[in-house]
Length: 362
Image 1 (spheres, rainbow, N blue to C red):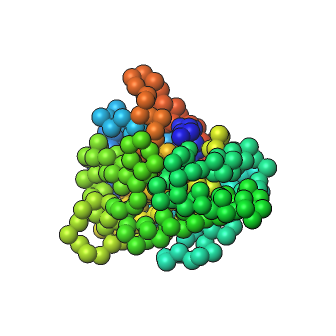
Image 2: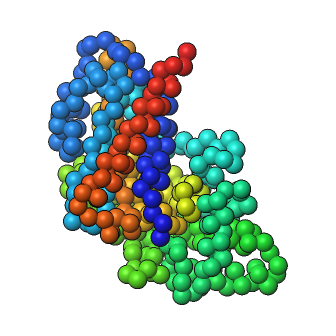
């Protein structure tokens, strides 16, 4: 595995930029009606005291999550304001996709996935890009066997990949074409499994020395921070991640990506779940339940509160990011704390850079 925490930070920052793009941050007049939102925020988050006028001027609060017993887990929280209603913020998080203008962008491929997933859903994947991390992805894919792989796979997936590689070589196919075929089939299989079974039953990576279950990884991350799990309990049950007596499941807006991971380009699969609440509030879960090699799973939770200002309705946003990665399993003490601080610093810097760019826009 080649986990790099900056990959996680960039991925988080990209999602943050999506939300910030909804509106320009400006200083607003006094007269806020946000006491309930701030009380609720302080009840489950790391932000016990919030200076709302400063958030309205563009300040972003970030805190590294607590050190927990889950050795390969890490988390962070942020808090900020977006100058539009929660429903708009939630809809944008659910539907937005990265802007891919050319083949030098850090996200090389992004696709929204229908339910059920179509057979051509991943047709736009290109692995012939002139990028070193994509080249390494292809090279390491060609080295996959039924007994050995650098990627997060099941034994069934690795066995099938080896057969596809041998067949492609026999037919004289180019390496990038073979790798595309391998990954298209693997990703479609995991997409369809997720759509049929939900977050709680996605297949484990059992090519690992110790099998890793993405579902268990997500649950462990949340169990380590019980106040947050309680705050989002109903949403997590409705997605199938936590046990529920309800038979119906909330469907998520699925997506697939190929992104720059510095060493080896990374495929990830995820889904965004949206839950309207009373009083105009919303909760959103962005769950990345599969990553080919950068990490195991990643969860991003949002709670959105409407706050009334003299300038209209704005949204107070709490966001929590949770990551499980193999590198963290061997990181201890101050080094582990340092990773958390680096992660939050990079996220905050990306947010502030984006804010500055917006504020300069006429």
